[in-house]
Image 1 (spheres, rainbow over the protein chains, first blue to last red):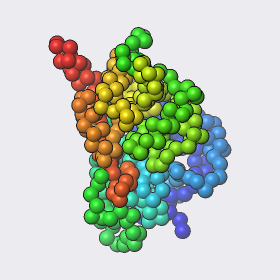
Image 2 (image 1 turned 180 degrees about the vertical axis):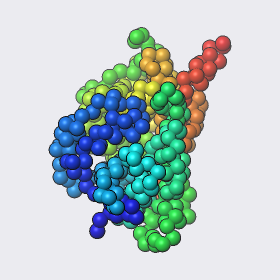
Image 3 (image 1 turned 60 degrees about the horizontal axis):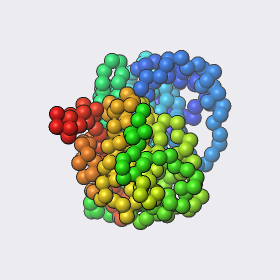
Length: 196
Length: 190
């Protein structure tokens, strides 16, 4: 079964994807880093990174290429990292500008959340962004994420001091957003237990 | 840089050596330390640590390129009673800090003085603008300690762990340089 949504398919990355990934890294708006990286990455560097990936059953992160279903075009990538099995993970997304405003990013995020909650059985998913990235914050809010933390003035980008922002969505909040889904995984914690 | 930056009359903040493994293992394995050991990312902070695991922690600390961890050694006895860490994995603009002191030497002012030394170093010897840290939500004394040093609670990241039958949060705390300067001015009578 493919990781497929209304608009996109998430799949393993391939050699031919590295050209777009290099372009995304070299654009200050899409490079997805808390401090600016020099826009001088090369496709050759990315191909070396790609070739260095090794097989493992013990994965605490993954990167998916995002294909637009209609045209088969590569639109960008979406990741999860810092996986704590059956507990939590952090997601990140980078979509090429021609696909902004098309619903591709939201659909990719929904497909990944479905994988993380329904296949990996996570209790929470987090993401990191910043106060200057209204597009990313809005995308996350639309999927049920709420702001749970910040580092005040923790970033300097485009000449501005910005807050680093953490957002989180709990498993029950995700299922609340998706009444068509039923959560059959028992919670390891008594739901009446207060947070310690 | 002044050597006094890394010590007081009471203790020295000094590099950790391979020979510290036993003392380090002893205080890290105190039951009270579990969940607040401030050991490197990726080392599970939930159970007693073997000597080999502690050697691995020392190895990770010694190979750190964007930060450092120093041992806290009492001048009078030479005893290793804790460690103090700062790192700038993201950006020197916003480094993180962590502190761990053995239960036998808590409430002696050691942790407060060690954090003040690290803050002095980060705000006066580096480009730091915001210094942040985290405390698990069950560690109320740790959170009160951070706030007493001027840190502001800036978030609670849910389900950052499970402890005694409940989820716990990672409480984020941070301190901006202007806040630190203002507090320092007040404490100097300015």
